[in-house]
Amino acid sequence: MQQIFMALFAGCLVGLIFAFLKLPLPAPPVLPGIMGIFGVYMGGLIYQQYISALL
Image (cartoon, rainbow, N blue to C red; front, side, top):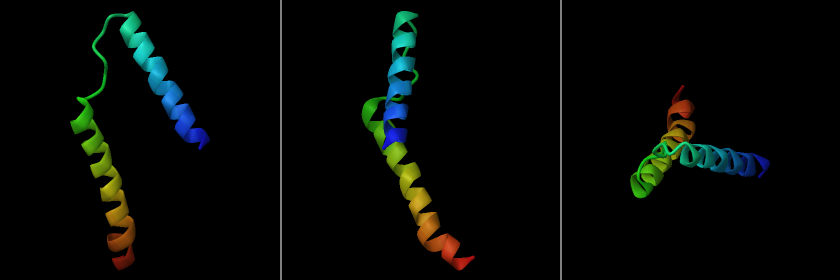
């Protein structure tokens, strides 16, 4: 749980810095970004469940 809060804090800090410097946010559009993160997570699960079992 602490890792989640640290990641959230780091993300907020980066967002504040980028906004202060008037730079575009270093993040993809919301839905495609969420789907990309979900895809990475699912790929890791598939590897753990199926591919690593074969090796």
